[in-house]
Image 1 (cartoon, rainbow, N blue to C red):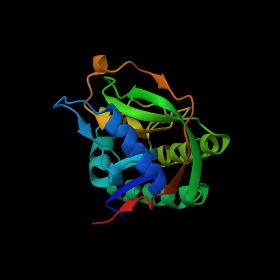
Image 2 (image 1 turned 90 degrees about the vertical axis):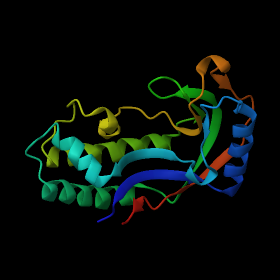
Image 3 (image 1 turned 120 degrees about the vertical axis):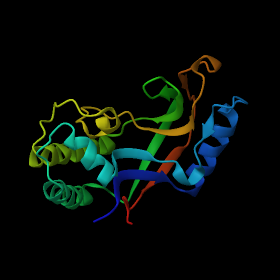
Length: 193
């Protein structure tokens, strides 16, 4: 069983270079800003994080959740999600915007293609099956750090470039008049101990 689990796509080399150019353009001298490392840039479909942490946090909502049931559910989710994910996606960048609970993550936004919407919907259907398997209702209020495990009806595709931005220092959202189509490749999705 992996230590961490996530479903995400990483920019290929050409896309990564373009994203790094944007990152440089939008970075300020503010010391609170943290640039996303090029190798960490990604578009998330689903993020569990460290499985042991996720289990502990979900047990605060469902105290009867056993480790065995949780890990069995994760294994089923991994097997069910794998065939839903193509090896690569072609996405059109649409602009720059702020994300996060306080709007402090500056990100490139993408047009949600029919393929991406279908992938997101299918994966979140499997996430619903996982939550049902472990005895958590799909509309349950999850711990703040595990809200990513809630079913989201729509996807807002983006890749974070800078965290810790001061929103007032940027006039956003900004839409691109022209931007390249970017290729994103599937990340294996596991970090093992």
